[in-house]
Image 1: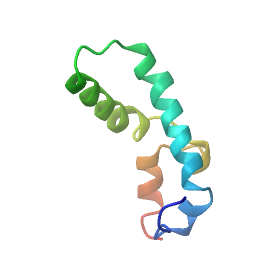
Image 2: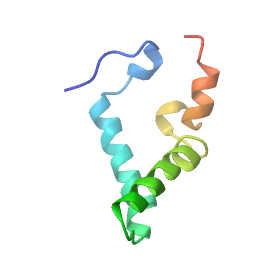
Image 3: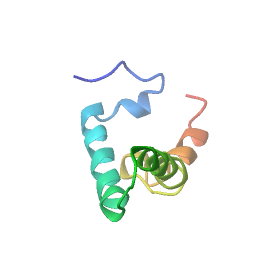
Image 4: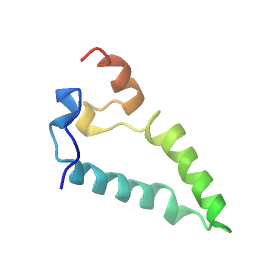
Length: 79
């Protein structure tokens, strides 16, 4: 089941479930499997940091013409 259509048609080129699976895989391989969290709160904080500082700001995404989501969003904010 996919979510509601995006306001920007460029973001609807792939089913949301495929993108969600890709995010899940990336989180596991690039963050979770590399650390041993002592508490749930630590895991939650590190995942948030990874998403904000790495995944959205630095990591290139093939589905976004090989730019990070933050950059893509700025570039296409006027859709």
